[in-house]
Length: 252
Image (cartoon, rainbow, N blue to C red; front, side):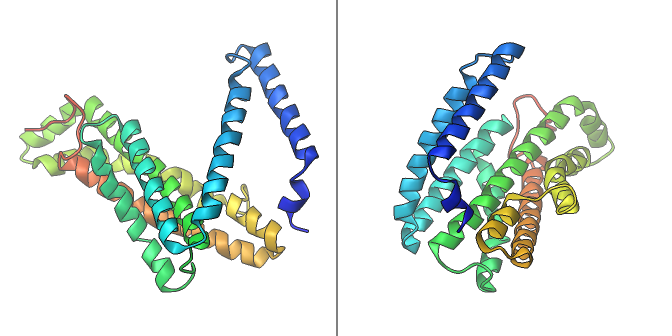
């Protein structure tokens, strides 16, 4: 019996209610905030997942509607990354996300590691897109913050004859590590400190540790490539002054 079949039932509802009530009690006793914070989040999660499950059940039946789902996910990821970056013309981060995705997805499809079906493409692309969105947003925000706090260094480099792009890149280049570090750490410690979701999911569904490990390695390395390419494009856009923040690192 698969784990999902074993879990679903009245016991699931009871245990989830107990966890929500316990978390709400901690909020109330420690003054973290309103005791209703966790219950509201839980209700929202249930409603959202129910809606998504209903949509995906219908959409993933054929490839064309699956691509529509991916398009919606991409737009949502772009909007989220743009909002978090707090930048002007942040919609250009769509270029970063696109670069990250096309560096990986065609490769997986070409070698048939991921079958050309909606039920396979959407989950894999969703994992890649979510991770790439986070690294892109962090890279943009950290780079623009750095240009603001180290504007004097940029001006000094310009006075030494550096071009605008090179002066900015000298300052913001090291910030890329901040955006890439979380997944690098997860990759380095996988199996030792952490057992990521994909590994656990495949292990529970198939019972094969070897297959679970292979899938997880594929996902981790795919995320590394996607994030690296996306962050590189993000820093290039900022270094060239395509993405800016008012009054930050304008250069000449």
